[in-house]
Amino acid sequence: MKIDGHGKAKVLTAEEIDALFTQGLTTLRDKTLIAVMIYTACRVNEAVTLKIKDVYDSKGRVRPELIFRKGNTKGKLATRTIPVLEDLRLFLLQYKPEKSRESFLFPGRWGRGHLHPEYASLIFRQACKRVDIEGASTHSCRRTALTLMSNAGIPLRVIQEISGHRNLEQLQNYLEVETSQVKGAIASLSVLTPAKMDSSDFTDDQRSARGVVDAEGERK
Image (cartoon, rainbow, N blue to C red; front, side, top):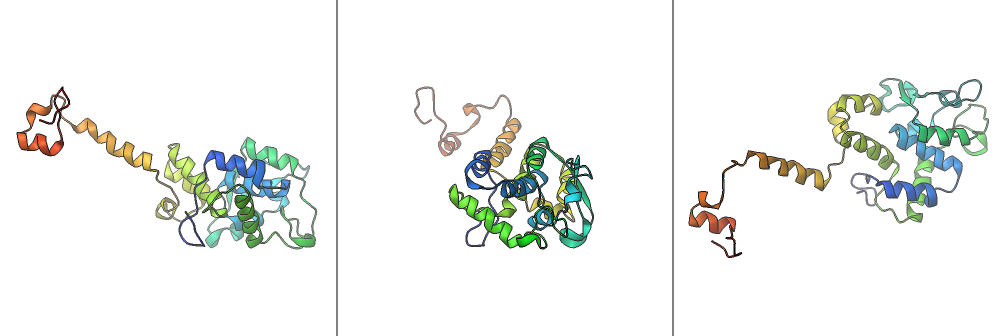
């Protein structure tokens, strides 16, 4: 959890995401901006620098894939194309970007340039504050998306293609490991226990140390 700029950004729950879109975010532009970040796992700078033509075709139809240009990605590694999920497409269908000289999807004040990443971060923080979400930042959108993919069993190499990370080590730093997953991993080791092992296999001292109890609930 991120507190005062320290620590990793919180991974959001489904309930928190629902609260953000129903109560926290107040305009269609803001909802569309955050939807782009959640449903593509992109960085905030990649979202605010999208051009209208990266999202809509010449007839104003939502493209089947969003295009994140190489020059706007961190490290400028490569252009990425991300399929548009139906949930995101619905936001993009409703959103009518203002026409501006540079044709950014999220234009800045008075149509100049694009929405500044810091202002986008402010929008997100204010939305979180309205619904009492603590420890989240715009990076939470990216961490949440990538963690959900990992938990769903999507191969890391495929997730890396979506996230645009330089290597798998960088990607793994983004992924949240839940306590229940750690417990489940340890519980899986129970298959190693010999099938016929019972309390009679232990000495009195071992039974005492392990807290083995008899049928009447008394320690042996």
